[in-house]
Figure (cartoon, rainbow, N blue to C red):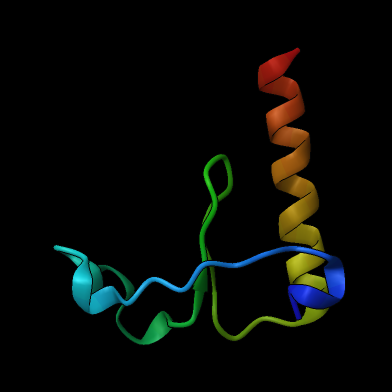
Length: 64
C-alpha cells in the first residue's frame, strides 16, 4: 500500500525493541512516523492517505 503512494517503509522487528511486544501487541503491523500518531492494523489505503496528510499538516504547523 505504501509503495502505491510513493512512500518508503522500514521494517522494524518489535522483538528488537525494549517494550515492543508490550507496546504494540496485537496491533501489528503498525505505521509509525515522527510527528504522527501510530496507525495500527487494520487499515486501508484511504486510512494511510489520511494518516499521511494529517502528519504533513502537523509538520507544516510546527514549521510555520
